[in-house]
Amino acid sequence: MLRFDVVVLGATVCAALLTSPALAIPTAVQDFEDATTQGWTAGGGPIGGVPLAPPSVVSGGAGGADDDFLQVTATGSAGPGSRLAAINPSAWAGNYSSAGLTTIGMDLRNFGATDLYIRLLIEDLTDLPQARYAITDALFLPAGGDWTDASFSVAAADLIALEGDVAAILSSVTHLRILGSADPNWLFAPGNQPPVNAILGVDNITPNVFADGGNGGNEVPEPSTAWLVALGLLGILRIYPK
Image (cartoon, rainbow, N blue to C red):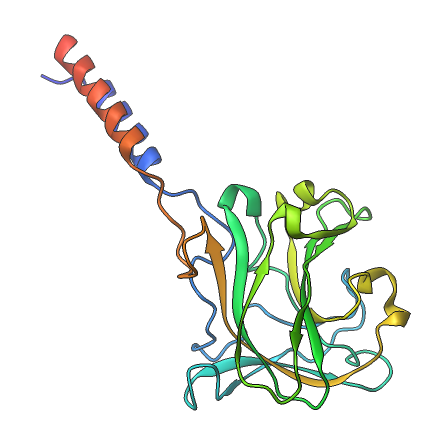
């Protein structure tokens, strides 16, 4: 008769090793086909400010007329809403380093009449009032262009540190922001970022983890370790069958 405690231990260990770690970042592409903004909204400053109307979901995305996408607008006037930005305070939080998140891909289109420079701002607001920020390089998006397959590196070596240590930020991300800014120091030089009248289309936001080629799935670790443990436990059972 097999020892019950050894069987339970073996099952628990194998299940743990064969299961991919839980990740807070999306485990699938955000394509907005559910007609919601999937956590994307708008606000004043990175730590709050005057709330703005959230981005909307409309048809005509990268996949064609019936494809939904996120539409982000900026009024170009003075005050809140004059600059191009969208923020996600929930879906993209997590430990990017342990998740193996190397790049974030998305389809972008500039529907406005002004050329845009699009960046991602990565925020860690866990230790307020001490906040940490890092920003990606910019992607040039010409006015009136077609959908563009964009990829933003969030590897530590490719990010520009604005406040705090990049490695610490990547291990404790709380917010992800899409913004239009030619100046990487936008956060600390808001007067240098002029208002813009813009309409930005965003579709198929993809967490490319473990360099998986952009399918948005989180790879399950190789099961070889679990099988070795299982074989070891079988050996124990042969020695201690009761």
